[in-house]
Every structure is written in C-alpha cells, then in structure tokens.
Length: 426
Image 1: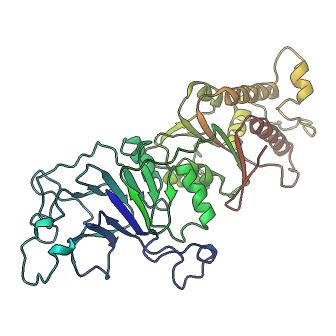
Image 2 (image 1 turned 60 degrees about the vertical axis):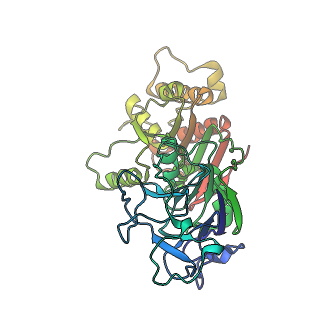
Image 3 (image 1 turned 30 degrees about the vertical axis):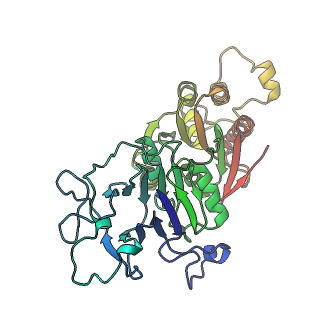
C-alpha cells in the first residue's frame, strides 16, 4: 500500500494557531493536522468538517463490532461496510488496522479519526437517492483479520503513552522490519530537537508533511542502544522520568526497586505509588538490594531506581551508620580510595564499613561485566552544602565515589537538571 501523509500534526497542527507556549514558539517546521491517504482510495482524518464531496464517510467506533465472523461492519446502518474492493479495515484494541489487496498491513494508533472510502473518478457522479454501493465500494470476498501477523507500517502518536509501542513489540506485532512513523505531533513535546531525541530511543522516525510511505519500505537501521547508562540528578530533577522515557518503547523491561517499602509513611507511599502508576503495565518489577547478583544473572533490560536508596539499604544491612555516642566526626567513606584498594584494609575481621565497601566492589564488577542492558538512576550528591551530620557526610562520600566508579564503566552518562538532560561525554 502507498500511504501519503498529507499532514503529520495533532488536531490543531504544530504550531497551534494562537498558542503562546514555548514549544509552538520554538518550532521551525509547520505541520498540518493529521491526514492520511491510502492508495488514493481511503482517507483517514480527524473527526469534523472538511471531508471531500466525492466520498462516503465511516466513523471508526470506540469498540470493534463484527459482521458474522468477519471484521467489517457498518456502524451507522448495521449493514455491510462498503470499502474499496480488496481492503480490510478494522478497529482493533491497538488502533485502526488496514490490510491492502497486496497483503500490506498498516496500523494507525493515535487520536480518533474518521475513515473515508473514496471513489475513483470514473464512478463519481450525482448519487443522490442512490443507496446502492458502486462497484469499487462493494466488499470483496470475506477476509479475516490476522491479529498475529506483524504490521509493515505503524503510524503512532508517540507523545501519548509511548509504552504502547513497547507492548506491540512484546506481542510481536512490531518487529525490526516494521517501519514506525510518528504522527499526531504537537506542543506536548518541548521542541523538535527533544522529539528527535525521544524517537531515537523509541525506534521511531518523524517525517515531513507530504511524505509517501509504502508498506514495502523497510526501516532505517536501528540505533544501537548503550549497554550501560547512568543518570544522575538531584531531588525532583526528573531523573526517574528520564530513565522511564528512554525505555518506554522496549518490549521487556524489569524495574528494579531498591528502596524501602515505606511502611506507614504517607509521603513515601505516595512517591512509590506515583512511580508505579507511571510505569507500563507490561513491565516486570523486582524488589532487591542484591544488585550484583541480578546484574550477573540477567540478560534482558533493567531499570535500577536507584543507587541512593541502595546505598542507604546496604548501610542498614551492614550496620554501618555511625552510632550514638561515638566519635564519628571523621567517619570515612565506605568506598576505598586507590591506596586502600592496593593494600587492603587493616585487620582480619571486616568492619561494617568494610562490608559496605565489599558490596560496592561487587556492584562495580557486576556492572562492568553484565550482559544486560541497564539504565540506573542515582543521586548527584556533590552540589549541595556539606551535610551537618556524620551520617550525611558518610552517605555523600560513599555514593559520590560509587557514582564515579560506575560512570567510568558506562557507555552513557547524563545529568538531569530541572527536567533537562545534559550529556556527560567521556
């Protein structure tokens, strides 16, 4: 099938007329509201006026209905839907699916559209009062939807729940041979540059208005994702959201929660709930502090959130926090410096801080050798005031040293500040 993208923006276009937001002010390429023409026979466009006079309109319903065992039904009259011969049009739970006479498969997954079946020029005319379908609008032989067969082209609004793309990949409906094109674009994304950055993570592409896509096309080679990514940031910087965004379109992700359950603390429970609600439903979750073992045994995709809560939990497990009544003013970092790594710590019996240091060593080694793809979130602790307590200084020094060691073994490191991402190249 030959698909013409006459417009690629959301219902109001991009920039949106009269909008004074920063995104609409930054955009340099004007995009018209979405309009899709398939083989010159079927048009998909937002609900509303502007349909051509030489077309019959079919509003795609919110829920699929079936005519017998087939997938076509006229949802306004209850009779058979009239599409050009050889075309199968169905509303699926994933969006509007179109299969052409050549077997090419298209999925549109975005905001609500109206589908219009156009007539070829030679059959147009005054049809007032004529309810009989023209030859080219009569249904061909009954054809069944093939839900398990991958799509050749997917047109998707990636700004609305990009995890839908990951779920399509998980179910085998989007494969490396599927061309994924972003449509419905608008000021929900801050800039065109930010859009391109996100699409690179999601394995999708943006094209200009007027682009022609064919179901026989093959996508460009996929971007090779970094195997180990470390995202640093302060409190409420957006670092967790950035980690989730980067992996949103992945088919299989295990979210690794390292923090405490929260007990009865309402504020902590609210934070945990917010994180859970943001995550895609098809992601798995593991709650553990044994990160080294998980990294050694995993080969999939892991999102670790985060290393700050992991360090705190390890201090708890090892009993390494400075105690009351002790002279802990000069408590040292649990991560050994280079001299200590060469000579070892004195004494045969490891101290609580020695045990914390061993856990950090194990984590760094597992991070360096893991076969998994990992995105880890950690707190940037070196930009604030010097902590007033020995425990605070010990936590800062230990986590800061661990961040440095992991960064040296990472292909990608970034700092997130106020929701903006600053790459930290080596």
